[in-house]
Amino acid sequence: MKYLLTALLLFAAPAWAETGTLNLGVQRGMTYLPFIVMQKEHLVEQQAAKAGMPDLKVTYDVFSGGPAMTDGLLSSSIDVAATGIPSFVALWAKGKGKLAVRGLSSYGTLPIALVTRNPNVHTLQDFTDKDRIATPGVKTSTQSIFLRMAAEKLYGLAQVDHFDAITVGRGHPDAMAAMLGGTEIDSHFSIPPYLQIELRTPGVHVVTISDEIAGGTVSNGTIFLFARFAEENPKTVAALYEALKASVALIDADTERAAEDYLAISGEHSTVADIETLIKIPGTVYDVAPHGILTMAKFLHRTGMVAAEPNDWKEMYLPLVWDQNGS
Image (cartoon, rainbow, N blue to C red; front, side):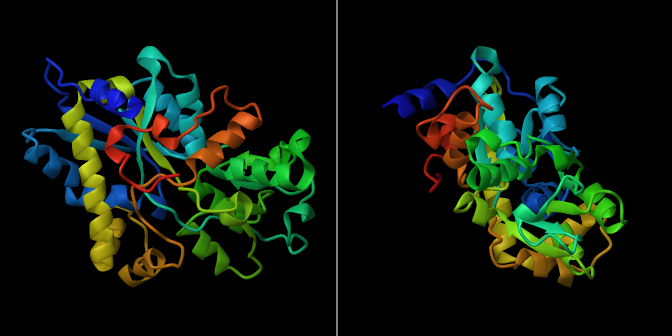
């Protein structure tokens, strides 16, 4: 009953016109393939036109990491953010009234691995204070939270910050360049395609993967926005959600076309065949269902990083995605 009431409140028809623009915050890499396909194929615009909004203007602003994207959302430079779960949970836990934040969906799970060029590091316990691990955001990114989760398992709750001192914030392209370039950054909690490029480099090897740390699948990120934006623009938000589903369906049905879209938008110097190979890597799943949200949220609450704790993942998301097999 409470979910039905929330749905009615969030999607009651407004008496004013919807926005004529939709500004999306995204990042680089294969994690964001659904957004790249949406951009290249103009899928949001197509769905908006079906809903009677043929003139919706959609922009895609690229950010280096979750903290910068969160700032963009708070400053209203973007309407919707797509980044790691920790950034979302932190805003959800603090947001009330006009600042209330809700998730829209996820956009998939990809292999996330901690890799290093240090020949002496083969387990997490082998890292010393001389090592440096790059993640998109210290303490705030999904990768940094995985490191804190690993620290809790290895050393107990009191030492959850064990790896923080050797973690540095870098966007994935810069992190890869730094690690392979022989700088003080010798390790990177990486995602495709940077992960595959790194592993082709002699001496670079995997230390651990995210599923080992979390004990199951966790979405690479989630889409979130202010609840008031969804209230005022239900057709626009629904068009975005339908466009995302259409993008995922296209990726599943035509990996060659998706790969061509990726190269066209990203500007990366690779081949269609190489990108198709990345799309088909075992463990790569593009879908809208949020996975591992409760696991991450409960950890953040348990370690004092957020004050609120959800009992159900649906508490945190808009009704559009409630029919998905989330967790």
